[in-house]
Length: 421
Image (cartoon, rainbow, N blue to C red; front, side, top):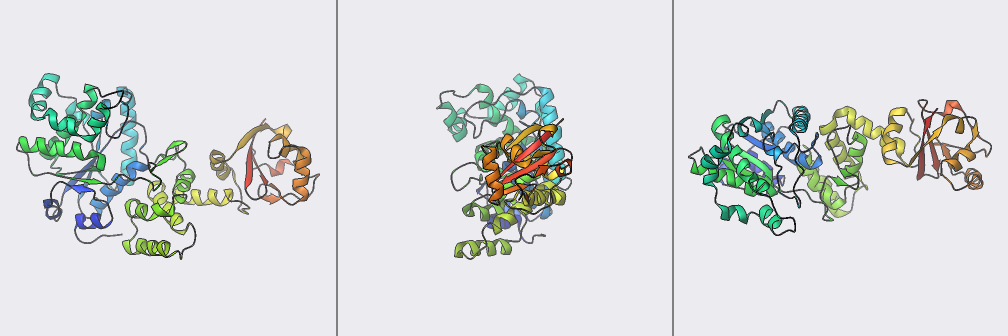
């Protein structure tokens, strides 16, 4: 999608803008502009919640502007307290460097030649006394205490350390430095970053810097009040080694009807007219169940994991579907194993043994007798193929990739057997 018109008008229509610091930003966006978002390197991968900011940078780029990703090699040694109820654990320099390198590679893959900067390069050069004298003197305690992220923590049982309290000064200085040294005049972030963004603008004003602007986008929350991008197992990561393309796809395909349209607007590059058609269909009740969710999941998975990731996700989804006739292979079963009950059994417990005996040992059923009844009633499956003979023997040819067997009871209950020697 190649957008037309003004960046700010476009983002507003997509629901990206929660607040802007000045209406002058719209006019400024009519000419080339550098805009940045900061990424906190608390892990070696970004997660689904970070994707809104990445998409915002991508739209910036599509409108002919320059996206800048700021990696927190300096601020990451403290950790942003925004939205946190407790202080983050301090990371070692080695861990931070590893995380920054990994996140940088992710951003380079997702964005077309972004400018990557590390605030450790300038924050690390400051001495304590110099920083307090040259930067800290321009911040007033009253406004700093009034920020929601500070006030809520001060009122909590744990309170807030001076280290965390100083974070907004560091982020504020980042914006001033980027404007002066790199001509970056726009900072974007989630709505919880408003106070940090305005702190930088105020510092820049006091130090007679060039005109700079801030824009925040809404934090994505599910309609049930839960934080988007979190599952029962934890964060939905962008690294395929931490969250597989299949798991990533499945999280998105399961979102509620009440959430899917907003996510299409915020996380995809679909045409607005197409999104509106899905919205109208859902509102009228005239839609195929999960049709919009499948479209959302495909589009976002394609952006994050490419066509290969989408192909893997769809292939594994089909293989894991109840009653599926899809051809099973080791790669599909490896992915299924993350989201399905599984057991490990020795090869001699499986090969040349009756299906009924194996089903009982694997706890697909409670007893051999129940397994026999399951077969007679037409509900027993091996690798998605129906088992019809109570004396059926599992042979080595049934083992997929010399490692896996998939047993099924009816169309919904399945268990994966991992074979060892």
